[in-house]
Length: 295
Figure 1 (spheres, rainbow, N blue to C red):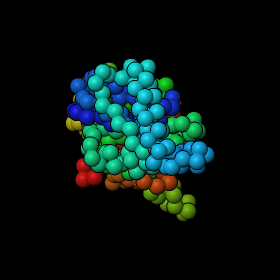
Figure 2 (figure 1 turned 180 degrees about the vertical axis):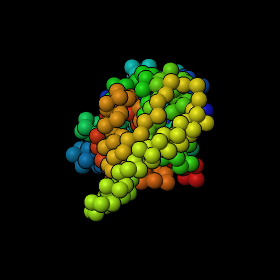
Figure 3 (figure 1 turned 30 degrees about the vertical axis):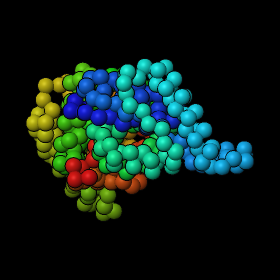
């Protein structure tokens, strides 16, 4: 994350978005990047207030936007946001306005809280889920109360072109923060799911050989893309990719997972289907989602 020029942080005044802002401010300082803060006044709340006050929607929207603007200035000061950071208040549907702003501003990184106002503390909130799916570039979802440097990173590698960028991003973050990185490859032998016992028995003879080949491939991959940092190569033979990632991150005390949104193996479903839902529902730490370049 050391080539960042612009960072966008959508905030809702929650503890989660406070952590996102603090982490984004730290990254902006490291990279010399400009920081843009966006707050969306939800039209649903405006409509409800207008009805209760017997006031036009337009009038209530103007009042809400002005109040939000004043609150945001105070909130940014309390959070220690860098002087001169841009801030924008809009009235609309939060997801739509955030995506619209991203399309207009084209930030190098979007930083958001894993959970926001009213969201459960277990896993990612509904808005974070949608942002992970729909933001076209890199998005960092920050765990609440984690504004500091990353110390242990898990980079999910499936040998695709996207995972090359995953490794590069983990490498850059490790250099900045002095973090250790586990380069993790989750795999499963296809024959292990067969109902035919004799095939499973024969196949078991080749598992160690397969592991050695994967280990050599992973070591070569890491040496090429991410040299000069403290790292380990980790292989896990597990049919449930999301659980394997979350379990390893939890066990190793990781505070950041870096993962691609698409790949060549079963990890291509990460952040696109059931694997994504399972992973985001039990994230033990912050996560940086890297998208393919063509997106």
